[in-house]
Image (cartoon, rainbow, N blue to C red; front, side, top):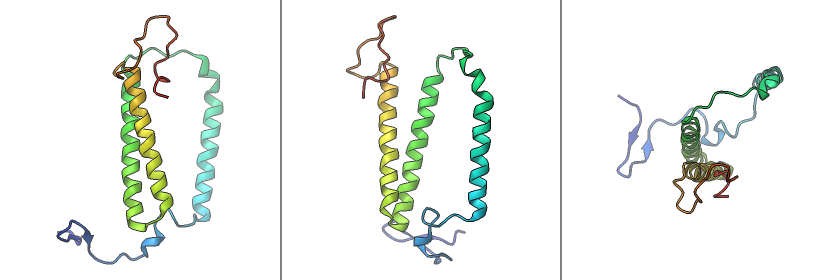
Length: 141
């Protein structure tokens, strides 16, 4: 059985947290160990990018459904991140988290429009013809 319960309005209540709500992860300062790990990750990404850069001109095989799958995953990730940040905002009442949440929600909306224009599902999108020069994804912008 869970230690948390809900009241009549659906609000969560239960044991008091062991830390003050304002000390959420988004508001705490990083420790030296965390900063060191962040630096290690940045260096690894930089070295990996430098190692793979000679292969940037090699064409990859065409996969017809790649864009739709990738775009759908990006939309789902942005929506989930917006939801989690909004929940964190509701817990700690830090307005910066609300702004970040709104930014992720906006990004998801732009990605939906981009996906719709790329798949010609956008109602006002001009029909693409071979060699017409229309890129499709820039139309909603």
